[in-house]
Amino acid sequence: MKITKLTTYRIPPRWMLLKIETDEGIVGWGEPVIEGKARSVETAVEEFGHYLIGQDPRRINDLWQVMYRGGFYRGGAILMSAMAGIDQALWDIKGKALGVPVYELLGGLVRDRMKTYSWVGGDRPADVIAGIQALREAGFDTFKMNGTEEFGLVDTSKKVDAAVARIAEIREAFGNDIEFGIDFHGRVAAPMAKVLLKELEPYRPLFVEEPVLAEQAEYYPRLAEATSIPLAAGERMYSRFEFKHVFERGGISILQPDLSHAGGITECVKIAAMAEAYDVTLAPHCPLGPIALASCLQVDFISYNAVIQEQSMGIHYNKGGEVLDYVLNPEDFHLDKGYIKPLPKPGLGVVINEEKVIEASRNAPEWRNPLWRHFDGSVAEW
Image (cartoon, rainbow, N blue to C red; front, side, top):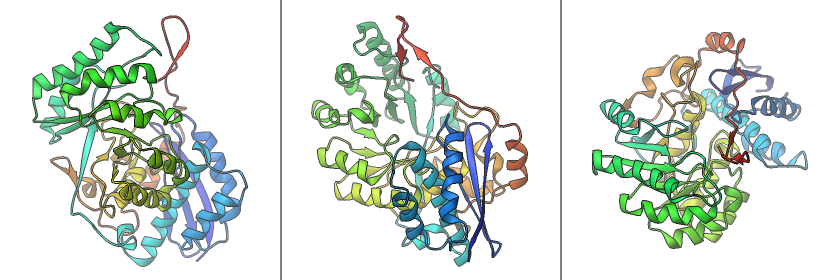
């Protein structure tokens, strides 16, 4: 079998899909994208095509190493995201060629269903109580929300009180009937992270995500020593070579690699195994589309330390396109009380509505994340 063609489609709301064709008619789909940098990743995918056209797509390990090591410069958000989508599509092809789901190729199921959570509250957390209530009616009992809006390197007690009051209201409204994670989203710098974590402890969140930015990872063990709240991170780390330093230092309880950013299935299976060796749990990051979610699930279902899966059905970013809009087998993604079963079809388990993808790609928006500024005019972390 030989790879004959790679085609990318930028589609609403902020995704990009990749189709890899072969001379035997088997097609694989991936989702290589950096939110807001889709064109950059698209170019990287095109450049990787030099290594892929004419090669056997079933030699996934070799092709991964060729892409990673063959160009001398390596790593980073753009290259690893391009590799991730290609890797997903190669696994999709191999599973389809052998007639089995990818999780069977990775050793088979370690669980029968996977727990998921839902986002609530938007970029600027608001109407969280009403949002949780609506999602509870849909069967969810676990949620994630942004913890703050703009937050200065050193900020006021008023800002701290506002962030804590929102969380207090949730516990008062729902007690222990729900669980929730709080995403600092890299908006909180080290001087304020310790303050917020201490104030939030009485409300026992499931985790605090990105308590500081990944480039400040040396603070993870220091913050972990100062709080009982589990700390989560990983969406802005792109390979096992970055993650190994976090494992060595300690501090992170929940690891969140993104299957569309961190080298795909091939790399994230290795990252998950490394995490298990350090007694760190796995909760893949996934605010993206159907291929990204399906890829996460393949890893979840073979990783003993996987505890919960993010999914973006109904998330606030989804303007002009929803996760299942481009899928011809939405029934396989059915959520029952927040749980999803293994996708039963061969490969990644997603049947893409190619006609709809092509049509949507003709008017794809140029999604960009907001640019926020502090009151003094300086740039704020979004």
